[in-house]
Length: 147
Image (tube, rainbow, N blue to C red; front, side, top):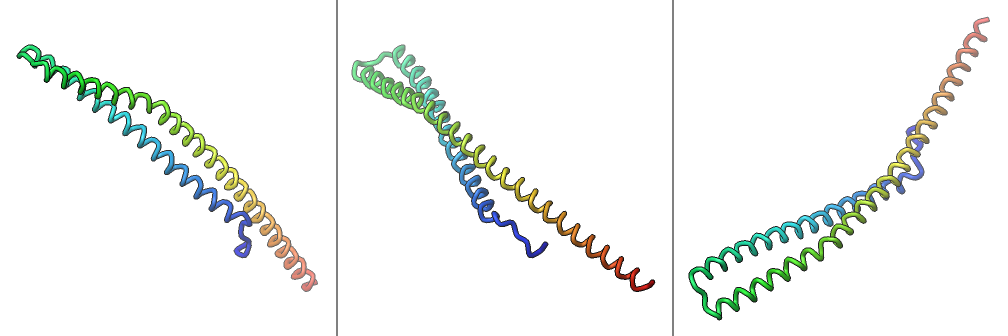
């Protein structure tokens, strides 16, 4: 049995590598999605700080130039927040696609592993039957010589 190798071993190795690649791609997609969520939280926090600061400045008195700066900055922050929100569905879709690809690759690899194990089990059974037949033959020959 030592001389018998699974003929599709290279295919199995390739499928394992494909699965690893899909795992890495999924991890990268999740990282991008998590990063976008973190940026969104940070931008929202910055917007809240800006709003509080603006409210305080209004109470203290604000000139038209500063009012314009706060307005422009608030508008830019709102646009950034909206851009991040708009990017999230696409990032979620990429994560979903990567997860599906990983599941398909894992399924392909598992099918080949099951096939390999079945073939190896069959090979062991054939080998055991040959050994049993050989031992039976030796036993019969041994008895035949004693008579």
